[in-house]
Amino acid sequence: MTRTAPAPGRDVTHAEAARNSPLRFKRSPVVTLQQEIVGNAMQMAVVSLQPGQTVYCEAGKFLFKTANVTMETRLSGPSGGGGQPQAGAGGTGGASGAGGGMGGMLRQAMGTAMQVGQRALAGESLAFQYFTSTGGEGTVGFAGVLPGEMRALELDGTRAWFAEKDAFVAAESTVEFGIAFQGGKTGRSGGEGFVLEKFTGRGTVIIAGAGNFIDLNPADFGGRVDVDTGCVVAFEEGIQYGVQRVGGLNRQGVMNAVFGGEGLSLATLEGNGRVILQSLTIESLANALRKAQGGDKQGPTGGLFSTNAG
Image (tube, rainbow, N blue to C red; front, side, top):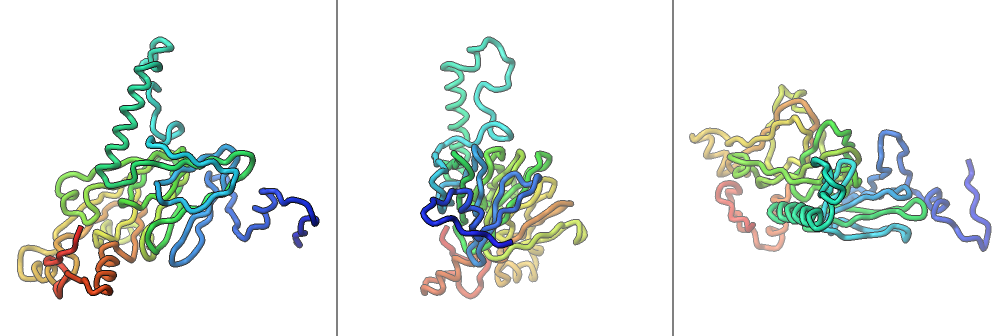
C-alpha cells in the first residue's frame, strides 16, 4: 500500500509522524509497553507511550523524548499497580485521617528514605526519572552505559526477575524496582558483589548488558550451569544462584585460580527457568582498556594475583 505524503503547507501531526517513522512498534495485547530495540553494537530502546502511560528509568539512561512527554525526577520508586505501596495504603483502615496528615507524610518520607538508602548501599542511582505522555502518543529513547545488547522482559506478576547491578534501564510504572541482598558466602565471593536488582509486578522492564546475550535454561543442561561470575545478566525467580570454588585446594585448583583468569570462584545457576548471560564482562573490558593505555597491572597470571583497582 502506497503512503501518501501530507498536503503542502499542512502541519504533520505526531500520530502521522509516528506512522511515517521507520520504527515499527509491536502491537500485542500481551505486551503492555510498546517498544523496539534498535542498533547493533550499542543498542537503544525506543518506547512508544500511550496517552497517560508512564515509564521510568535510572538517572543517566535517558536519550531523547518527544515534546509531548513530560519528565520528572523523583527519589521514590513507582507506586500502585505493582509498584511500591503508598504510605498509609493497606493497614487496618481506621478513621479517614489515620493514614493521612502528618503521620502519613512521615511514613511516606521514611519509606522513600529506606528506598534511597538501599540504592545508595547497592551503588545504584539515587533518583529515578519518570516520563508520561500527554496529549497523544509519545516517544522516549533509552540506552545502557556499555556496548552491548538490551532485552525487554515481560513480568506477569507470578515470577520476579533478578539482574546484575546497573542492568536496569527502564520499566513501566507498574513494575517495582527493588534491591536483593545476597548474604553469606555467595555475597562475599560473587564477582557481582552481594547486590542484585529485583523486579516484581506486571509489565515490561528493559535491561542492558555488555557484549552479546545468550538465553539458556539450566534444566536443559542437567539442571546446573557454572558461569564466570561477571557473565550473569539476569535470571528468573526459581533459579538458585550460588558461588563455588574453582577446584579444590590442590595443585589443579591452584593452577585454575592463578593462571585460569577466573580467580577462585564461579557462579552456579541451578533449576528450571530462564537465564540471560553476556559475552563481555565489565572486568575484562576494564582490563583491555588499561592494557591499551599501558596501565595493565594484572600481570601474567591474570587470576589470583590480579591488582585491579576497584
